[in-house]
Length: 154
Image (cartoon, rainbow, N blue to C red; front, top):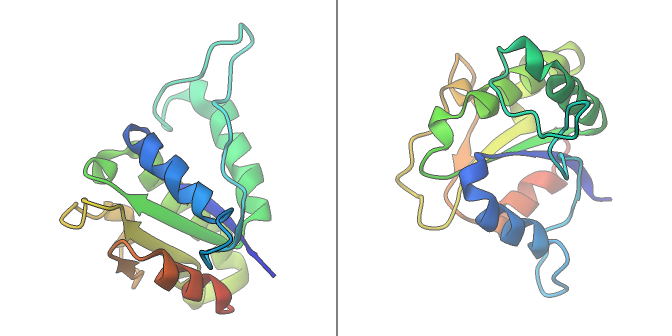
């Protein structure tokens, strides 16, 4: 059965992320997961996308929607590009997912989170929230290894 996954990434990498998500539809590729990530930007009452940091009170609808998605996801995959380490949203997602799942998984929560660098971003800095006293591992670009990780029960 496919793992329920939320994918965290910096939006400057959206083209590579779209390609990554398409891998699961390729019959010649083993990567298999149910994507519980946001499909569209969360919008305000006037229909405009809410674009502000997670610490801004105006971002509450975005945070609430992501938390609803986290409820359905058992894993968090952080796709790491050259600028991901500077994304407040990626760090917020990692910390929030960890704190939510820690209630269920205790000290093994870090096994539910995996970072993977994108193609041509192997030297990218890792988001600080993947450290923070946790033993989270990350991979160089290797969708097959990520698929194997998804198949293991956390």
